[in-house]
Image (cartoon, rainbow, N blue to C red):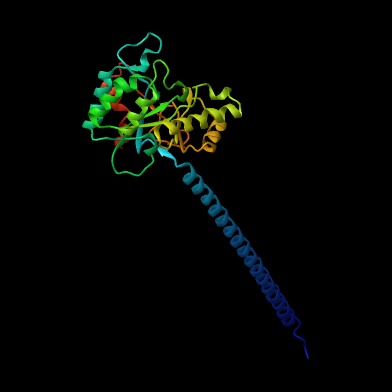
Length: 287
């Protein structure tokens, strides 16, 4: 009997290939399952990291209460007086100019708010009028115009200068505060350069000025204006530790940016400011 060697070899070869193919499929399947598990673990880890990052980012936003100029603009004044020396003349806004600017605010239907109110939700267009230092003319010139229009203003006052020549006294501060039209906030004790202060001096400048103003007005002081607009991370942390909720700079705002609540920028109003220039700073309010 002739043995079909050729046919047997073909069957053997076919079976071997089938076995090898099956083994390859099983190996590939195991590898695929391992890869699926690996991808699943990576995906879960990524989602967890994303969730933790989002939580901390949200916490920072809640703590710092980011400020946007599109919600409320802030204007910075210093003196309201017709008489001005040659040096620093631009800081002396004429009473007639201040009167005109408030009339513009009223005609545009913009609501005036205190500095401490700028982050409060509102559907209205708003502006915070601020004045630095606490000069006497804030009482003799600015206050009557403010009452004329029934508008609010915030004065960042230097507590050690209260009652000194050229500055408001306690009686005037109390009268303005009790009118409900003026809020008094801190501009430190002595208006010294904060960068030059050591830790103890910095605490004194921030905390003692806050306490003195609260004693005079009987109202909480929660806002600070950095002297000359100079500040850094250390000053921000010190302000927070002393109980402030917000701090203002002298930096010009950008309507497209958000600002951390201890870096709130302000628009400067100056002597001889044209109507078009004054109205331009309200552009972000009307967006």
